Image (cartoon, rainbow, N blue to C red; front, side, top):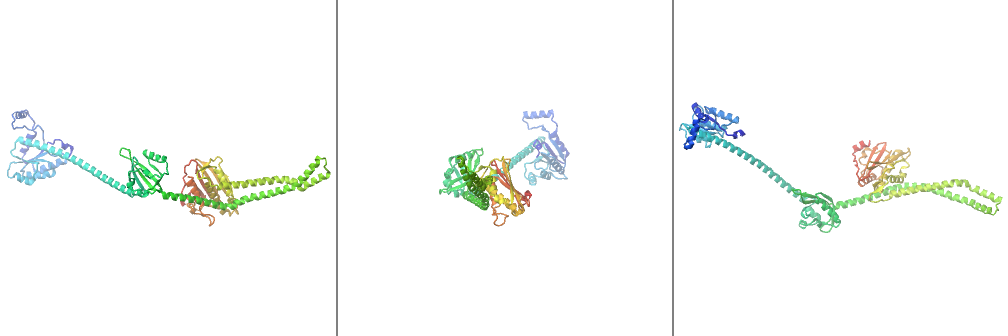
Length: 619
């Protein structure tokens, strides 16, 4: 129903085959108001007479002269959203529908229409009429001839009734809409509540079944709830810990400052993550990885804390074992490398030692040869003091000097001494380099002169490369000291140098086809120090490029490599120094290993190469 229909509806349809009846209705309902009628109304009020003038309200009257025509007008009014409020319908309208059939048809399209059946016959009783149309509060009977006041009363009453009915229907419709809307809202709320309850139930079951220990504590830190995994982890039952403070688990392994910092963090509304050593009910210690999350209430205040705990005791023990094994492995690898270098180092030391010995024997012989010259010179000096020098004494002295070849000795002995000192310096350098290389170093980072460390390692490995390659160093003299583990860094450089020498050896056939070249450069790049070791060897085969840092992988012949060198190098540079180790290679032209170490503790991005990526990058 439109909003317009809620206004007063004064539209009336008259259906009667007698045109005179239509005129009568119009005179009663729409005739203009006159002075005489107004006077009559006042008279009726004053003398309480049962008289009423024609209605002051104007009605809109439409006429139909047969039931079918009236039905068509009702249909049109409904379609035009201007329905009639009531209809006066004649009982007999030959040759068409009678009043009862007309009402039945009209109510089929407009059930709200108020109807007055006008009849002058008594052959159709009220009971017969009700039997045909059914009991209805929308139907009244007006006997002909009818009184004008009665017609006016019916028109006024039934049009008002129609308007009130529409208002009631509208109000009911609004109420129904509101009820339906609220019902939908309640249905949604109930469904959301049901889902929320289901979710809470699922979460509760999940928390209870979780493999990690879960603790819910109030803002005061007192435990409110624990799951079975917590009881299995600690040995305490839920009844034993609920109502207790988590410090029940204190192990004595952390000081008060540790717990104070933890508590201040969560009270500030922040999540605390860390490892903590606790004590089980049986007294044994265990390590747990814990996350404590503050939970806020509806007004934003911290209401409780949820702690998620994972027992990492076995993992910590495994890590400690792994660290020990890694240290042992690196130490064994270093000993292996030193063992491999021992013969070369012995040779490096033996060469200067040999010419030092030869020179010392020459000096020894020279000193023995100069003994007679000195003795003859002493006797000649004593005789000169007594003015007793004879010609024979001078002649003997000259013969002794000539026999000793004193000019030769004076020229060669200083050379022999200088060569010996140079040999001593060479031996000292090798020994110092060996000492620096093999020194275990500290377990903490130390600021190191990388140029000096690399130079020492080059010296130690000299016997590995000197026959197959020339060594070129391009060190940045302004290179800052770099935080690192000196012993382990030296091991990395040694492994890469030996690999470079072996790669060049495969090309030069151990130097028979000439020598290759190993170039070591250092430089600072932003907040990093970069070490490049370039060789002119064979290059790395494409199929091996994605595997060279894997443990026990090697392209060398059996007995020449264990496959641990580069795996350890990567572990040392990436895991321990937070740096990176990459490579560039080209078959037949050589390989460059690039090592980057952070100056300010910032980790370098270490590229993991697939076979295809490595091939593209290394070209």
